[in-house]
Length: 576
Image (tube, rainbow, N blue to C red; front, side):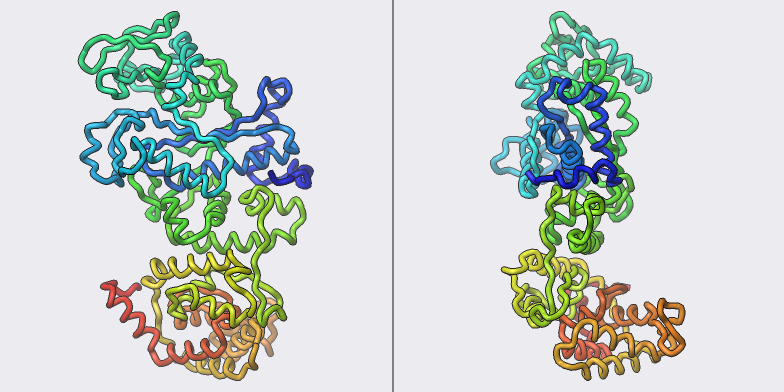
């Protein structure tokens, strides 16, 4: 584990949200008389997972955010208090509907209401059930990311008797649980409600039926099975499960959970979970409620609908660290989760990583990369022009996407050719993170950027300005730096009235600033984009001579024609 002792003092006042939650957890222990008197040998962090559909990024978000709070707690306490994180799958839940995104939906209809671990696996392979398959998908990603966690299956916990003691207590305190639940239900539901859901011994389905008898002394329930016969089952041994709201509180009491976060859709039920936990002899854990993710259309993402992004889709186009950053940022604000957010997340991560080493302890604790990497982020990767004679700088995803565009690159070797001409000595071996970024940029550009590009022709002001820029760039000396190129770009625009900005910082009547309109024109005409990278940095890597040829191609109309041909070959209507 990373030594976090250097941050302990700064952690006491850090306003980063994981530290705010960790301090609440420290206060919880103090209310219990301190960890030494709590009777526990660890603090338990739990996160829940409903395997009714394929795992999605929201599920991952709970785990990564809980891990962030866990690391913050360990920092606050100097690592003196052991911690565990349990990822709990409610896989004994009955399958209430067949998800939309599974093969051969009709074959699963006969298994509705059966526990997810009793539903055949529609994907085939080595996993014996739908629940086992989805659990494995979740664990695969968590293991790939390197989370420190323990996986728990509701099916295994119920059947192994790990909840038996609290289930017997639930039978004893049945009326108290009903007093909590009934006021939250409508009249019709009240007439049939029971916190116990028996699993039919004849059909294997999870039954939503009223209880005819709850025998607390015997620890049994009696109900009418699906064929109308009365059946008596023990509440122990996996013969029954609890309704999901009582199940939350039961699990907290049985496992003595200290911290759990959940989505805003659970917020109104949190008080119910807490009351049932207390009825069953437990102390409710600290909560953290986060906002739900939305898809591109602003609708809540759903496992069963399969809208939004999957974990694998994000990782096709970006590294896991960028996804973790997306989870860290403003968790109590609703955010749209779709492909267009990926480039920004990648570049924000690189910027935070680039700045970390220059920050003091307090600022580092507010930096997302501290939380993403458990207090020990890797060193940033930078490249320097001319093999190290210039100031080293990071290469952003946005810059690579534009480099892919103008180079028409379909493999990594082409982009590395540009990078190595700009910075000799840089290679995939010396810069593995950049190498990964190059591959991501090629895939993302091909799938999402290129079809949406909209090139336009220069107008009567832009054409002579671009011609002047081509001449200025061609006159630069060999080995011109990004700063020299950028200054040439500015100088061309300063004499064009449309682009003069006399209100810019440092502007004078003799030397005006340059408005964004000039750079917007460059991006639209040369790159087919509304926004782009710092032009000097882009041209330095792409090459000054190549940039001049790019301008000439735009002036001749070849960029518009080539993109139109690309779209037509794929049957895609022109964007815009």
